[in-house]
Length: 194
Image 1 (cartoon, helix red, strand yellow):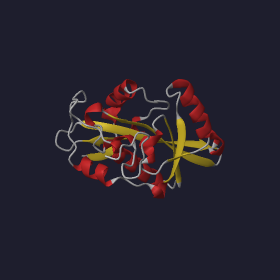
Image 2 (image 1 turned 45 degrees about the horizontal axis):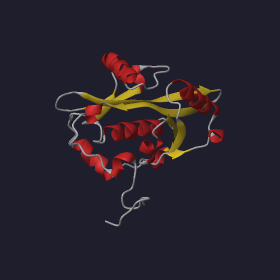
Image 3 (image 1 turned 120 degrees about the vertical axis):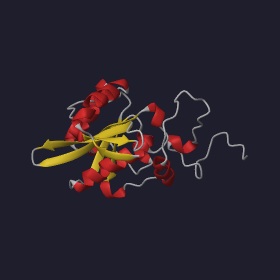
Image 4 (image 1 turned 180 degrees about the horizontal axis):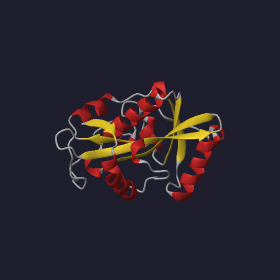
């Protein structure tokens, strides 16, 4: 597996999957995306983009539109897409990257933290309102210092050998880490001590 910049020929595939996953496609430009690709089969497994908002003399960077095809989930594909986008933002001189999501626990495993809307740059605050009204009513804003990204070792290793699986296969077991829970430190209401 590897992550590459999207090409013009990826546009239809991106638009189809963005629509199927009900993701935000505002100001869509395929060249803004990166795509995770299987080296052997050349199958596309996931995608995402950063969007730069220019306001007067300042710019802010937003991570958005991250999606992983169901057959590739739980194997570090999304993690590597996010990593590539954070690196790109850092390379472009951004110290902070924002994301508006209804899955903040997913991004928390990489170091993203929730941020109050009153502390957001005005353009990101507007995007939060827009997303809540259109595609993600439960969206929250998160931010990350671009130098503070960290990837769990399990996801880095899983990405190296990722293969598509049947998403309806009930034998595929999800563990606590798939939901952003640290199994070593979590406590549970009905912990029986076993």
